[in-house]
Image (cartoon, rainbow, N blue to C red; front, side):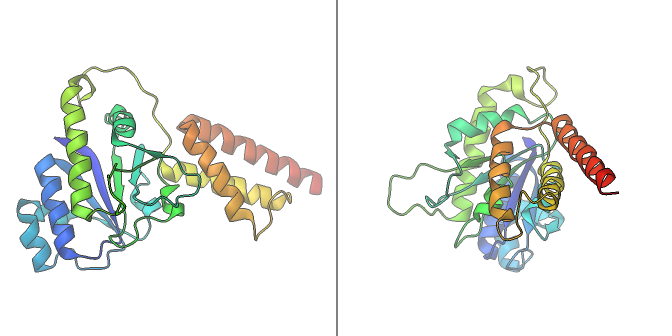
Length: 247
């Protein structure tokens, strides 16, 4: 059972695929499916037919308008990616990233994010996650069916969890730091961008690209909530000092 896992589907387009994912989530004891702007009716008769006992997960699945909103309460977020044109976003194998995800299983919800069937996740969406997972496919055709990808990742995670019972819920394990949620990081980046625009370090037409570099830095550092609060406190003090001089 991996109740703390949230499987997040971004703009799923096929009810059969969604139903198959729900069945897999029921098989592996996933606590919740979350859906971002679905392009199909996830409660379609075909979806429920494929879901079988997983239909209850579909009926309870919350809907969100953005990926950031969907994972805002998740302490660790892993996105999946099959593309090779990912810029400078590092990709990890399941063996590299799933142990890290398992380490945070007691801290609260943790998320596995799967993208659109036809084009996956955008680079901006990948940057919402702490880490990006890719499956090693020995082929020139890298794109897996959505439900197949979910099956492989959940199976790998379940096998890892079975081999590490000391990292299971309600059992003693080493202490790992609680990481800031994507929402906390996003709020910090918003504060930072507004200040840097105000002092002229950023320009409107380049702010998004330059702030992406900051987001990548924060992802690599695995920033904690208290560190986010410290940075936001500095920004507030700097802004207060600037406004005092202007007065």
